[in-house]
Image 1 (tube, rainbow, N blue to C red):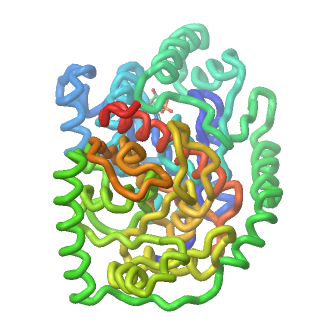
Image 2: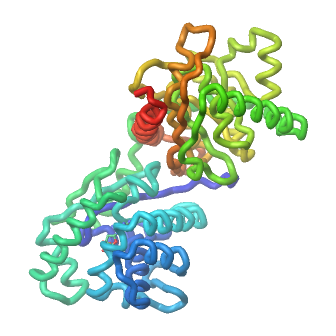
Image 3: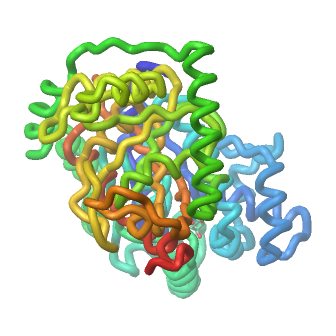
Length: 455
Ligand code: DC
């Protein structure tokens, strides 16, 4: 893991709202690079035209997007080795760019490339339509720009040398496609600051935004206290051959029992990162949640478990042999969180139940910030997981499990890029990631419950 912090500024808004101008000026002020993600969708649209493909032939366009090379740098766009800076701005390309951008597989591919672009540069000012909502929900600052439709049409017409009236009606059609499409539509993300740029000179806008970056928010203060409590040093035991083998054997036994006893089925395995660390964040309705997770992946995952379980010598030994580590409930246990960050930094996945303890019923609410905090601190993705039916298998207070079906749904990872200089993670970031996690887990849990026949 790199210890270099990322600084990401996310700017979204419709065309002509002033994103590119602001992004370029901010990037220059902050010593960062600027990525125009719209240019990437335009690059795919250009390649579609050049190949003579139908823009709505989803499979062919997605295949093309995966295979092509796109290099976007300030002032130049190179597509498959050819300078396409001017070619991607023609009316023909503009007309189909929003059709191409509604293709979910194209979006998946371009979002992956956008994240890689930021990773390579250790940060950046990124503009588009879904940057704050999908690509970098954990960005340090999220802006949503708007402007009156006349102003937007005038700006675009000045850029392209066309008539403002014609531009206005084309823009309205593209806006409608961008805001109503199913995949990552243009929306103001939670936590985005909305700025109307209609009558604001660029210089003033940049000054205001720089002020926003300098002003610590209230939550940050609160969070610093938590960080002091969780920052202590703890010992990390690297995996040995013996411990990995022991885990592998126990996991295989657990998975077999679960499949036979609860007919466990798993959906969404492809969402698990193939390698590297991540935080597993499952819903928690039963003790069997620990065990059924064995059916998802063969990799060793490290669990955090309440320290009172260590009161039995045998259980304590077993848990430790499995790589589990204790957390003291009821407080932010600095040693446990610190160890968790260390484990992730060493490349191992970790399980944290964001509800903090077993809960009951269909609603996922009041998540604790621990999972989001460690993920942002270690700069790793969080994988939300819904486990359906486990409460029927073993309710709170019951001593023996009953053979009901369990269905697990693994969700798409959330990438909370830590965005502060230094290792501090602002409370605002933790809150935003936690809110997103809560929504995702609820959706996955609902689906898993239905598929398990427990809804
Ligand atoms: O910002 P622009 O006009 O260059 O964007 C071209 C198209 O790409 C436009 O229809 C919106 C779409 N787009 C998108 O869907 N998501 C982004 N992150 C950026 C642009």
